[in-house]
Length: 112
Length: 112
Image (cartoon, rainbow over all chains, first blue to last red; front, side, top):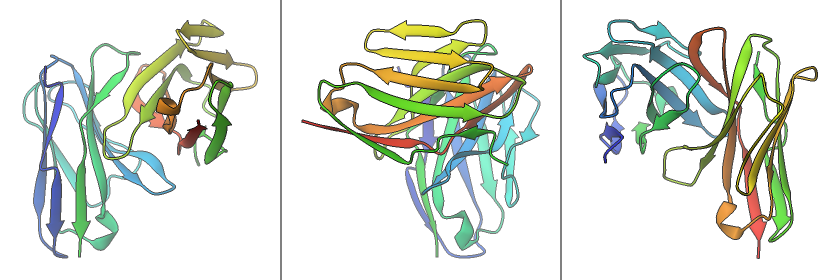
């Protein structure tokens, strides 16, 4: 009964380093999302994938890339990390349109 | 331009009383609304939703009201319990668009 699984849970990067956040869901959902949560800013959509093979920009896509590897997996890549990308990142998935999204536990990323 | 607004960053109520959390939206294309609850160090969890064809949806202690003409929805929790203390996010979907848009959240504290 895993739902949405994110790895890693914590990460510290130096400015300029790259890394990939992994996300997998086992609910056979079509849509997947990456959000970031910052104090006082709520949850802001970075990228989403409405279905396997498609990806679209959200509200704050700059500095990020995504890959919808297959129906289960949706990864988020930071090519050159910046301190402004220090945040908590959440992956989510949803099934049919107009249904709730299920979230992972989050990845706390610090860029120094 | 924030499309989903939660204008109260925080709310404090006494145990047993009613909690009312408010949310306003600006995008007329939104036709499905959700409330999520988030505890510290956890991912958001779905609470309750409402379609734009309804004006009320109830699930146990939680009721969501939708006023389409005012572009306003509210979440009522009655009676409030200390375990309800969390950040509550309002979210919206619409226009056959899979982009789930969140407000900034309201921190609810229920005092024993």
